[in-house]
Amino acid sequence: MSRGTEKGAAPRRKAGESKSATGKTTTRKTTTTKTTSTRAKAGTAKSAAKSSRPASKSGTSRPRSAALAKSAPTVRMRVDERDLHPPRRPGSADILAVALVVFMSVLAACSTSLDKSRGQPTGQTGQPAPQGEVSVQFLDVGQGDAVLVRSPEGKTLLVDGGRSAERMREQLERQGVDKIDLMIASHADADHIAGLVEAARTGRPTLFINNGLGGTTRTWERLVTALEGAGTTFQKANNQVINLGSVKVRVIAPPSGMGDDQNENSVGVRVEFGQFAALLTGDSEKKETLAWIEENRPEIRGPVQVYKSIHHGAANGDHQAWLDVVRPENVVISVGENSYGHPTRSALDLYKKNGLRVFRTDRQGTVTFRGKADGTYVSDTER
Image (cartoon, rainbow, N blue to C red; front, side, top):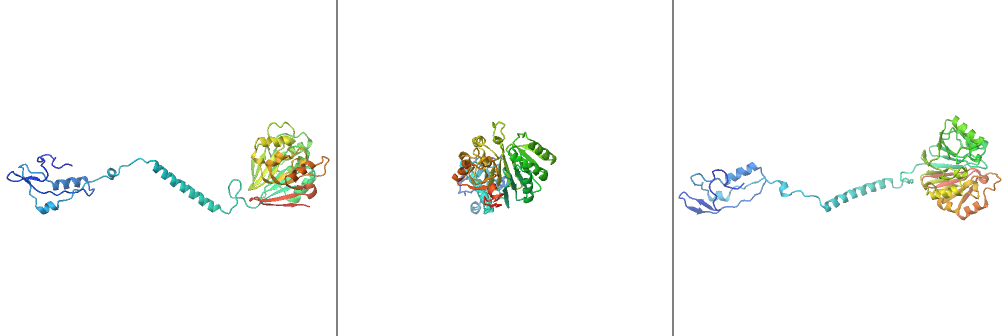
């Protein structure tokens, strides 16, 4: 507020001038004050009026002593902080600083998470690895395939069953299996499904998966009847992933365009337990395995610790391009006395060339692998 502008105030004089009683203008020394505080506006106006009272209507002013002039009161004004420091829009430097703080916080959280999980083996998903071990057994059922998988929790999977119902019954009793949670028929040939008829009656499977091509034999009809009597659910292979306890079962559906041939429509199965893996592909022939490679199916890609020889070691089964993708460490040939010449010399030479450890059920009986989630395993043979 400017001094001397109120209603009735005397005309403004120059600094240091005052009018005496005689009407003469005299000059006196004034004291300059500083603004030092932020009191309320009401107090400011009151202090300003007190320090500079306007002259009376008669033109005279009240005289001041020298001491009063030296100790003139300080004018206090209210100053809003927003006037002294007006807000500004954040610049690129501010945004970068905030981003850096957020990044460092996330990095610290990740480091903490890693420290907590240090020393714990992890599976392929990055989750803490399951405990215990998975059992993969290539049952000695003569000429044919039969693979029994058991999870640490005791869940069971049976892939194929050989051609002998009697031998399958003996194997299930020997292994102490009275319940089958999942049954998979790679295809409908008799040396893969005949033993499943007995397994269906005694194990009462919860779920049955096949290639969707129904067999034309009486053996197939007996299997369907046994599964229906057990209340089993039927599914066609469609690349399902089934959790068998802590074991993952990845079903590999046949590629499209395979026609109606049973061998070329074999269902593949990949068993995973952490970093341990086993791959089974029935009687797949070269046409099917090349189609899987063309499809770039992740389930067939190795390395895998355990691998079942295709079609009992037939000449039209395994080949170099396929093994280059699968990269197995061990190969098991499920075979018995036969007139087909299985396993063939060409298949045995191929396995030798690739440095694979070879097991044969016709010579060593049931072959068992027990794998842990860190990928380590032990093997055992019946004889």
